[in-house]
Image: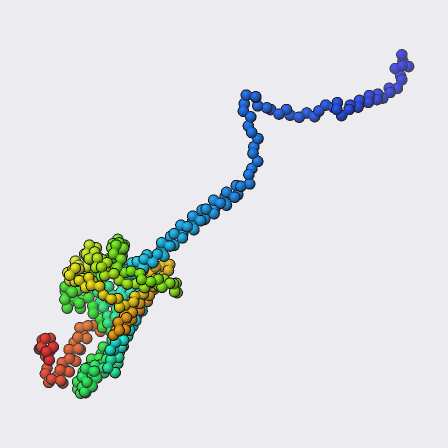
Length: 395
């Protein structure tokens, strides 16, 4: 027993693992799929995604783009309609806050004349420089001057070459035979006003005629109101739309960023337009200021006549702003070849210098009367002291 217990313990060798054929191995544990009951409808398998989503998006984008282009094109065609371009140009000129312009008028008939006016205007004043030349009967006449008008009522004028005009006057009117005694007072007067600004104040106008002064101020206020009141200008626009007295004869194409049109007038529509003005606010305001401003159909009888068109009128309007850039009128009459060209620029910054070194109109009139009396004394040996203006005119 003891010997048996003292025998060394032999390691136990585990029995060999039985080899199981592949077909007999336990399958791997896989989650059992959950199936819907047989009573529930079986959802179809998801359809594979089609690749036309991007194509549809492209088509939609193209359609939207075409619609946008179409709308823009329609707007462009409407905006550039010739009648609209011309109408806008006229109305925009009426509503402009500022303007500068150069106007040139040439006439060639029995005498040759040229007038160049360089003007500008803002909401407070307007000014113009003038250069006039005329050749007639072998004699030349030149007048240079300027004018400034403040809308509050003061005006300024000057003749830049008064002394030269005196020589022309003495040579032309008096036949060059004026004595030194006659010429001297005229030259003296001319030298006093030569290239000098002469001021005609609102008070001066009032002293000449209270009624004239009040009428002038009322008219200026009415026009200022018209330019600032969109309802009043729109009223004129609607009246013109109803009576388009300016017709487009020919499209002159585009030049220097402006569209050009040859125009002609329609007298019947012009007459209807003028008569229609009687119902507008601007006419009522002006008529209230000055009763001589009146529209009478009897005065428009000349518009009932059909006359041959003897002038060519061209209007150029900026393509995008619809502001007038040029207006030209040419006479085609055989005995009167004349042209007028006006080139305006609207709604730019315009400054106008109001003359400061001036002579009053009252002082100038005193000097003029002295000159007139001296000349009359030399010509007729008669003093004009105490004479009325009608008596002086009879001399």
